[in-house]
Length: 95
Image 1 (cartoon, rainbow, N blue to C red):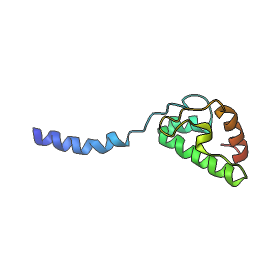
Image 2: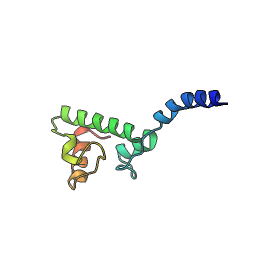
Image 3: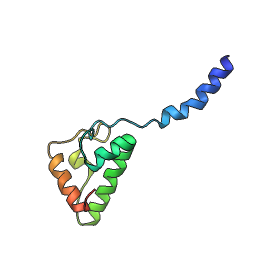
Image 4: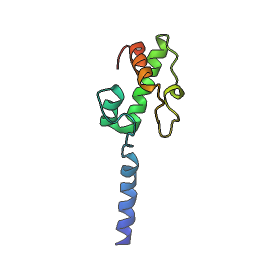
């Protein structure tokens, strides 16, 4: 019996690790990040943000994570984040 518990734990541990991380910032609405959160969790939202920042900067913008987020662990937003997101989306050419 113990042997099967060990085998089961080894087989299921990658599934637990692969579980999508919950979003804590873009949890509602129709922004590109909120949509990504619903589809793939925090990692998908982070990927979408990086994509948008890259596109916006190629179009002449100067966007950086630290301008809108207090840190990159909690991704807590600064007060200027909503206005800067509008500018980011405009400069990136949409979401």
